[in-house]
Amino acid sequence: MTSKAWLSLGANLGDPPTQLAEAVRRIGDHPAITVIAQSGIFATKPWGKTDQPDFANIAIGIETTLKPIELLDVLLAIELAMGRVRTEVWGPRLIDIDMIAYDRFEIKTARLTLPHPYAHERDFVLDPLRQIAKDVADWVVMCAAKPR
Image (cartoon, rainbow, N blue to C red):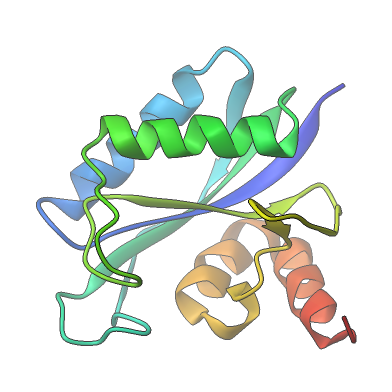
């Protein structure tokens, strides 16, 4: 069974546009993933920790046969292979890949919450996502407005 997932990618160290393109290539090279949509690059101010370079952000849509946690593991492995080191929350990074939505699943586990719990607060996520999947961006915002 194929599912659709929506990812947010960002980078603010090195050559962000090149790193975003490389991450998209690596995601699409996985045998269980097909990239079906990609936004343009959005230049954005940092969120959370503001004393760092601006970010380049994109959103992509994928089709996959992976389950959400399996997809998360693939994305984390790609980040690691590209040199991502998690040293500080919201700090600078070579690459960041977040799963924003997976079909219309609403789940909350120790490892993964969908839709992404902060996406509705972040224009750097919503603006690129709206460019390729306005209905998904609207659903993410609607989910955040529901009592949890």
